[in-house]
Image (tube, helix red, strand yellow):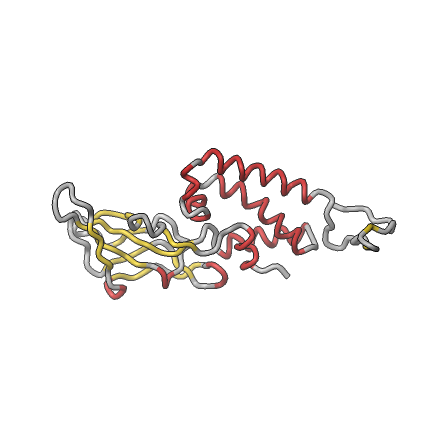
Length: 212
């Protein structure tokens, strides 16, 4: 039986650090001394990996210095489906005390491109079409590709941001894979259909007719 963990492995959507460690934390807003609510740009994150930072520049033109904020100083939004059954949360961060005017509000966390709820829809649809586990995974992979290439944020997460080195080549490779998976799925067994018997590595003549 195919599970969500296998689906994530198939499409390379295991939790990844975002932004990558070599990059600065993700800026999610600038304090004005009054605002207390800020939002992550991407919501499918793992709660216990989230760190919120406040950044200030010691002098004009100097690099920003980011300091981690204690989790006791902010709250995170209501529960939402997360990866592999781990409760994730929505993107709302609420400070108990408003960040000072000019302070950069930033975040770093592990994230996934698709929530459990998202992937369950693809998995359920594929299981209704095919009976073999490997074929089901291929079907899910084919079906999520359009959602991936249509959303830069998802491509960022799945590739750890490396797709930006050559976006056109990455998208072309995904579309080529989409076509290849479609061909692989043609004529494969569907739920309730017969499966051809094998004898010494060859198909026996057993009146098998693939169904689609």
